[in-house]
Length: 367
Ligand code: 0PR
Image 1 (cartoon, protein in one colour):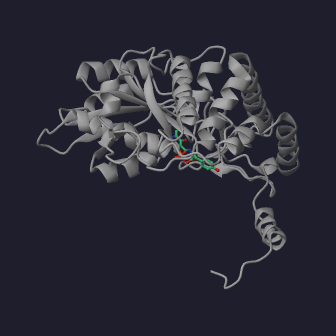
Image 2 (cartoon, rainbow, N blue to C red):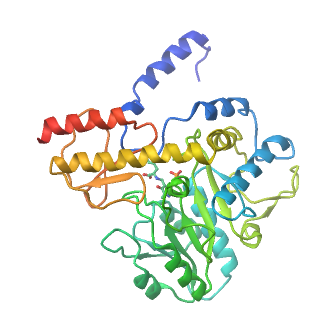
Image 3 (cartoon, rainbow, N blue to C red):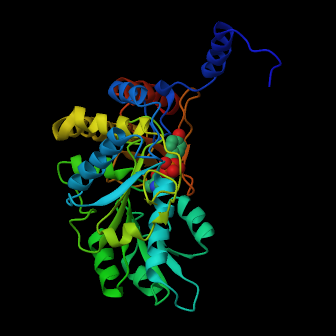
């Protein structure tokens, strides 16, 4: 601590200096987060003082969280879905596996989960915390989970099968109907990690099946702080049935509510209302426009890169484009997959002008 405080002016001059060291979104092609929409910022500011950890004190904010869950449930073909707003995909995935483990009960052997090799590293954290064995299923040539291999890995100690709808590295959607059929046959829940794709796929002109419409899908993780243009942190975990949600309950004797289902205690209302605000503001048609733009930019960058001989690794299902390794001009921030492919994410802040400027710079380097 400083012995004496500094003036607000000095404080903010200093903070702005640090902020100036951050990379501006106008050069970021590597992130699954984006610039929050102005309505999200405004809603966040209005609810900045709220704590969803004690909903009895903030019934208005809690009602908006319930509405967010309802809206996302309806978007995923199950208006009666239950769940809560998490801090993001990591928490949602931990909690989904926790619920699956509780419901599985004791078997004698070490309980396991069957996940695709493409699964986000949050599943490693979840398995570590929950003492689960993580069985990684190989991918097919298009980087999707191989169903036959998955079938070979499930046994009596499996508490959950995981599919990803919009993989972090390649933007692929796993074959959810086939995996859900396997899950039903084995009597285990299928958890779908749609942290990224959950707010893309429903707005595509020809959406792939990934949600509660598919029997066997019992839980879904979706992150408004990714394609939902909310402020950070805003995730959501949805369950098809209350039985699975209630597996997360702990008693909270001195709070305004008797039980809590969340991982965090104190929880910010700001980003949760921010997430809802964006969905309300855009509606289906507005979101379809946003996603159409992101997918057009995805197709344009793939086509543009291929004219320089930098070929796609795969044709993605959502707005993540990957290429054979190639040099990228200095100012642009891109990422590299674990297989060494160049990866760009066509988020809403990556507008057409940015794509064309990137391609011009790539052309100068590669043509
Ligand atoms: N599931 C999937 C499919 C994800 O892509 C991610 C994060 C998660 C779960 C975990 O979500 P949280 O990070 O919200 O807990 N995917 C990105 C990644 O790890 C997150 C990210 C976002 C990384 C912005 C970098 C960045 O600049 O690559």
